[in-house]
Image (cartoon, rainbow, N blue to C red; front, side, top):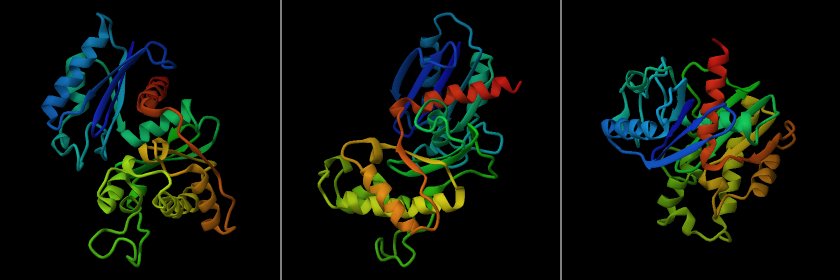
Length: 282
C-alpha cells in the first residue's frame, strides 16, 4: 500500500493506492500555516487511511522550491513557517518507510504527463496559472534535470513597465495570476464576468510567456492547469492558442496547447508516477 500527498498553500490532499495506477481513498484538509500543526494533521490523515496496513513507500508534492536533498523547502511566501523543516525525515520517523518529495507544480505536471493530458508526448511543458504561475519541463515521462528548479512565472515580460508601472516587478506571474488580477480589479477572479475584456487581455499576456516556453523548451505539447485556466470564469483556451500562434509569428510551429485533465487530483497522480519511477530504479 502506498501513501500519496499534495501539500498546497490552501488545501492538503492525502490518498492511498494499491497498484500505483489508481487512487483508492482521498482525504482533503485545510493546510495549517504552522509546520508542527501541518505535520500533525498530515500524520493523522495517513493513520486514518492505514487500516492496520503496512506502507510500502510514500511520495508527495509541496508548494515552494526544495532544498538540494529534496527533504524540505528553502523558501515560500504562503507556507513560510514550513521552510527549513525536515519533512521527509519526520514522516520516515513516524512510519518507517521511504518518503520522496517534489515541488507541487512539478509533481502535478508529472501526473498529467503519466495519466492525463500530456500522456503520449515525448517533451511536455506544464504551466499552472492560479494564485501564482509555475511550471516544469518533462522529457520521456520524467521531470527534466535541473540545477535549482523551474520558475517560469518569474520571467520578465512587461519590460517597459507600461502595464504594471514601476512599483511591481514586471513578471508573467504579476500579469496573469489570480492574485495579480485581484489586486488590479479589487475583486476575486471568479467574480469577474466571462464576458469582461480582461480575460482576452490575460490570454494575450499569457501567450507572450508561452512563446518563451516554446523557444526555450521546444515542447511537443503545453499542458495548462490552475484555477485561472480550468476554473469558471477562465482564460479561454481558444484565445491562448490563437494569440500564441500570433506572437510566434511563424518563427516556429506552435505546439499543441491543451487543458490539464486531472483537476484537483493531479498531485496525487503525480505522486503515484514518482513512486513508480523511484521504486523501479531500485
